[in-house]
Structures are given as structure tokens and as C-alpha cells.
Image 1: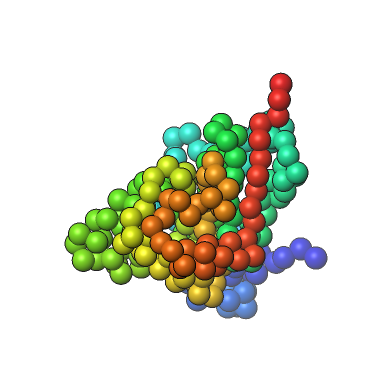
Image 2: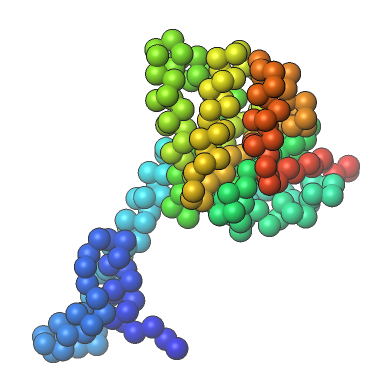
Length: 244
């Protein structure tokens, strides 16, 4: 069944914050004795305004995300034929974004040059298109944020800001070491994001398997517990380049 012009217009009004039901619009059209062409023009105007707002929202989310804008990384411009391994097929299903809705973290593991960062950024960009907040940073940048927060006495503020994005992407785990205080803040971030009761996930890329991540963090017994929570019901994807 085709949706009426009144229902379509009322649907466009919702993201615009306009309280206009299909029945109200139909009553207005009837009262003013508007023609079909005039009614369609009204519907087209609201559709234009809704699309304009949607595009502005997307641009704001992409700017906040720190994802590349000039040469964006997407699932469409990733060459899946280059990847081999038992997890290669599941890469093609990432565009459904089921992980973020299921609150599952993702780790892309593999040697340099296999497209781990590309896929992480493509996932984040797809989340932006679904009106979700995304934030991308390298592990070294995360460490710098923690250290700055420690110096300024704003640790809680720093961690709190990293709780806001639905999708938090941390690139290149294993390229730097976290001292004791930065490790504590990292674990605090994990715990507090784990408790978020809404669609969210953390995405990591690394050349090293998660079982080897202990050497990059300055902690003892707490480390295993934190990493267990980090990868509780998570998706770890191992992939390599197909040999030519």
C-alpha cells in the first residue's frame, strides 16, 4: 500500500520538530481547498527541509568524529577480495552495524597493510549515517589525553567525554605504552562504557593479539579482569592479505 502524501509529510515533520499530524494536514488542505499539485508542493517542501537538516546533522557528526573527510574510508571503497582467512567473510557483514546495536566491541587484528584502520573508519562513518556519534583517535592520542587530564586534574572530565560517542575507535593498540595512571583511566573508560545501556561499541585495531596486550599497560591483577570485560562477547577479526 502506498503511503499517502499526508503521512509522508507528517513523517518529515518529526525530525524537524514540527507538531503536524497527517490528519491536521489533510484538514488544512480540505479547508483551503488546495489542489493535488499544491498539496504535493507542500509535501516536497517538507521533504527538502528534512533532507537539508539530515545532511547538516551528518556533516556535524562527521566533523566531530575526526574521520577523514577529503578521502573518506567506506565499505564501498574497500577491496574485500584482498583479504583472506577464516574471518574474511564476516567482514562483508559489518555494514549491517549489528555489533553496535548488540553492544559488542570489535577488534581488527592483523599485520600492517591489511586495511584494519580503513575498516574501523568505514564502520564509524556508517554509524554517522545512522545519526550516531563517533570518535576516532590513535592509542598514542588517547594516552596524550589521559596524561593531559592527569596534569590538569581533569581525569573524570576526559573519561566522561569519551563515554559520549556511541562508537569509540582506538587505532593502533600496541604502538605506545600506558603508565599506571593512564592504565587506570583506560580501565575506568572500559568499565563505564560497559555499563552504558544503549547501542554502543568500542573498535580497536592492532598488530598484536589481545592476549598480548598486557605488556602495553602498567597493571597487574586488574588487567586481566579489564581485558575480559573489554572482550566480553566481542568480535575479534583476524585477517591477512591474499597472496598475489
